[in-house]
Image 1 (cartoon, one colour):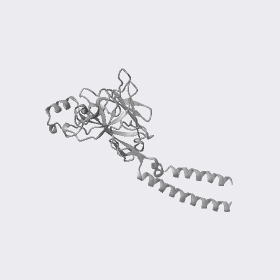
Image 2 (cartoon, helix red, strand yellow; image 1 turned 120 degrees about the vertical axis):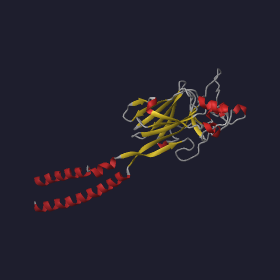
Image 3 (cartoon, helix red, strand yellow; image 1 turned 45 degrees about the horizontal axis):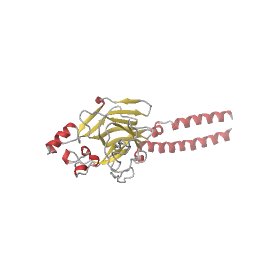
Image 4 (spheres, one colour; image 1 turned 90 degrees about the vertical axis):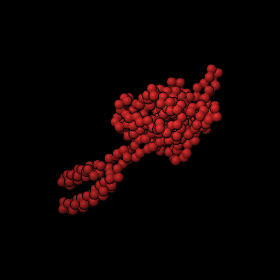
Length: 288
């Protein structure tokens, strides 16, 4: 019986080794392969998002299936995230269609860009001396200064790729702070990312508009990150002036297909191994 017990211990050791084999171990391997592109025109279920309805953005639920929660922080603490329709022309007070008299958030051929449709803004929502709203949430208008917060809900974080910003003045440089899954954080320097201006100046026919775009009005920029952007749990982006977010892109971790196959194969092999060893044990018991 002592020999049988020793044999059982040996078998368990062999089983452990089998489950630790390279093929089975690789089942846990994951990589950043699932790309999420958020443009604020549809929610995580593909439902179209409307602007100008006074609906405050549901930061926790709007892109839940995309592994993203939205938040905002301002000095006043009473601001909300809203969607602004950038497919507009001229000031609302002068017969245009841009709400909040905010035609510097307009996009399209007039400004040498593609129509961006919905963009994300921090609603100004300031109050006058009598406590009344100067800018209703039914009249979207971006606030000067504030922090956009992008929380990524996957435990492994994301591989953050790029973000698009609209209407940042030339002298206004945003700050990007990445918070990582290991609890550390990093305030990025300008040398840590690349900026591309998307306005096609040759397309702009109005000289006054061209001058405004050169100053940053209606400017469309894309910020690309190629380092310090792995396992990002949260991004906080502070803008020192007015502005809006047009889109963001990141990659999530999903199991590699080969890993799943390796797990199935490993289980089958382990099952055959146990069946064979069980038969050998029964033979030994008869001999003993």
